[in-house]
Length: 534
Ligand SMILES: Nc1ncnc2c1ncn2[C@@H]1O[C@H](COP(=O)(O)OP(=O)(O)OP(=O)(O)O)[C@@H](O)[C@H]1O
Ligand SMILES: [Ca+2]
Image (tube, rainbow, N blue to C red):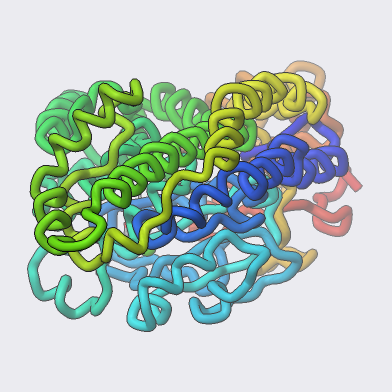
């Protein structure tokens, strides 16, 4: 359902893997090492803020972080997006996911425990080792082959429960981990269940941990088919109201309303809206590989500006230490007066106050340090850093549109409908791997005769019914359109946009199987086609 590129699966693979190893990301890694890292090292940047960046931090696929209170449908959403389960996936009405799971592309299905994940230098998770063993035992990587994951990594998270007990039981700082991820991901999806809109204190803290990354937040109002249209409108209002108390400007975040799974809709009234919303969301997600390059450059700009201010700040502390006596006293004075010092430096050097680090955080860290061990500014290194900010990074930003067109990443291709003939004009199927019970044969084969009367009642013309006629009939099942679309793609065997009786029988048989709880097969080998279609 989420096809990265046009029709040609092969070329799409080639392009999407190239997209992360692109010249922009390589250029960024080189610039970081030659022009920013020296300043970071001179002035203990890694002790104050975040560790040294690795090549994997630059080359990694874009990431989407899914968060929500328990049972809001996070894991189900991932299954829906991938059209299959990830290894180790558990779904249920009780709190089920108890780990952070990095769901990423791999040639075969495997899971990797947190300890192994954080020592893999090829992956952008090495810094997570700082959160300690209690966290690592709650971290996992699930690898699987999926076209969606070729351009994207998904982070499933444990549902947020309310209550102090859960906090203590965890043994690691949930919010700090969320902050780490939210700084690095490209999109944060906050899931809500229409029937449980209250935001617990715990979840509020988790959302607050994302602050500074508010622009990455999208909201997903899930299970929306479970209420009437009128109730839904009320829910929407109530959600914005409660979010307004947590996020500064919740109206800026896009809210996607729908029911993100493959089951029949409980309320048909809003089918069209849900389809459009789902389509919009998937188009947004499909565009992430493209926007990720811009995000990476912007993140580096942010980091470089902070490193500059930080270097000047530490140089100030160093040069204001008395030469002989009164070290401790002077140091304490500077820590107390830190905001005044910020102002002084801001004016003297023309640096915006917004670039300065949180003064309380600085006061805490500085209180354990000896200012006389800091280094004065290295003029050459600072010149390189200024050059990075004023010349190199802006130049790199300009390169991005060109690179994107070369890679051929086209948003239009993503939301393109599969074969104009499909009356379920939603999304493309994704050619996923066969995970179902079929394995090339029916348990109960479709019986064409059974559907004859039904088919005749639709008044076929020259032995065929139109896509529209089939649509009206198939929609009676209340199945969501993406499922009906997949069924249609399998049943319209000759792809002429019409259904003959055997094709119709095949379609309705698949509809009935789906309603009985079986998955729609990914492909139908000839041996599974009814008589008359082989
Ligand atoms: N769109 C939907 N409409 C109705 N029910 C749904 C929908 N999506 C998921 N569910 C049901 O909600 C329950 C919770 O789903 P799921 O386990 O995916 O949630 P979760 O957010 O991952 O939960 P946890 O935080 O506990 O891991 C399951 O019983 C699932 O079948
Ligand atoms: Ca889950």
